[in-house]
Amino acid sequence: MSPRRAVRISGWWMVALSSLLVTGCVEPVGLSSSDSRVQVVTTTGILRDLVSNVGGDRVRVTSLIPDSADPHTYELSLRSVRDVVYADVAFSNYLLLEQQSLIRTLDANLPAEAKNVSLAEASVAYSAKLIPLVEDLSLDTLWLGLRVIGGGSDLGADRGSVVRLSAVDVKGPGRLVAYVTGSFGQPEVLFDSGDGFDRSDGFDADTALLPTAAHTHLSWVFTEPGVYRLSLESSLVLGPTDRPVPIAEGDLTVAVGVDPRVAVASNPVLVDSGHADVAVDLDRSAVVVRHDAPGAGEPVNHQLGQVVLSVPNRAIQEVPADPAFRFLGRPGDRVFQLAQAVLGRHIHGEIDPHLWHDIDNVVAYVNIIRDTLTEVDPAGAGAYRDAAARYVRLLESLDQEITAELAPIPAGRRQLITTHDSFRYFASDHSFEIAGFASPNPATEPSLSDRRRLTETIRNLNVPAVFLEPNLIARSTMLRSVAEAEGIDVCPILGDVFTSEVRTYIELMRFNARSIRGCLSP
Image 1 (cartoon, one colour):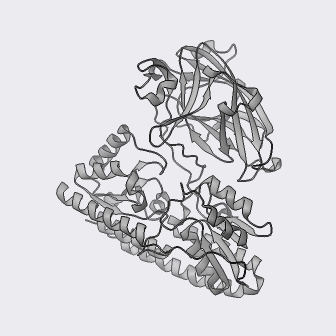
Image 2 (cartoon, rainbow, N blue to C red):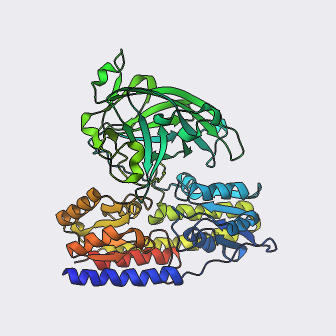
């Protein structure tokens, strides 16, 4: 296929689908206190559609996130709070799919007697299939992040609670700085020993805030070689008006550019590769190092006093000329850096939250919705049971239809390259491979190395097309430009939004199957 044809195809899809998203979606009506039906609020349009199919005329349902908006990044408007206040039932996906600010607003404003259901979490009891998030461990140096493990239910924690992890002191030969680089390259400093630590304000300037069950990436910079000891304190904030409850404290030892054996007198656990996190364990009231070593199987938790982190000399980098990084030193100054590895302050959980791309998981969602509506409205139990059964039959038929639709695609062409990493459930269900993606999630910007890796993947696998989510067109210039350079198609795929032509979950799944067959079949 010629590059000229590929440009024409990608341009057509980009214009057409952008238009559909901007002008085509009709947002649902809101809830009402004067309506005798069961009032249901959902976070996304997909969940709204599932509730409509089960609830029928007995429910009035609306969604908080516009049909064309990205649930990963959408911030709830004040107008939507009214719908939450009127709701008898709330359904979210969660597993950190939606913004935590949206979830906290939902939890804070939902009436006390209302049902509040996170479908992804609840689906485990209904035999849903969960896929762990996959992260790249093939880094030249240690990849060090922050994490919260354990639910903290004994402490009263829920999904609206926040963990504070504060740096309160650093002993070492130079400065220690931990920072996050956002999607557009702007850094946000979390810890900086260079300006001191202020206990009087609760170390606010040196504190990371993490939702329960969260994980985030950051860069760590050390200005001089030697041994550093970082003192940490953690606490739990149950709700927006609650005071922090102390959890645990400890010292983290880091050997920078020196033999890590000189850092402590005893024989420590050396952590120098793979993926590790400074983790607050809510269930055990501890701060630990959670280490996921390459090829070692399950991650292992180590007490802070048992561990030495090693930063090798190959981690030496120069401070960039960009004024935004002047907080690290002068341009050209050499520092030791454990890189963030992915850009963007995207806080995520342990499980891929995009469960609905596996139809069996949606059957689990439907059964949860049926049981929840029955609990709220026992008089409608028969109607909900019958409607759910009818819809499940449609879903089972859809699954067979999609399997038949995709059958002509040979195994060697069942390679998906997408805007971001949200189609693992679909791939697992229909024997595809996730060959690559422009970025792991919508909050991250791909790097030059990501571009090179994607180009090599397309060439090595002879991939005929890549797939672009229309609501992420503005963030997908790299994917389009690589496809243009390689002379391959850019085809549409829908992740978590509707368009004017795709207004239901069944239509979304059918659309994706037809697009994938049309672009990957010989």
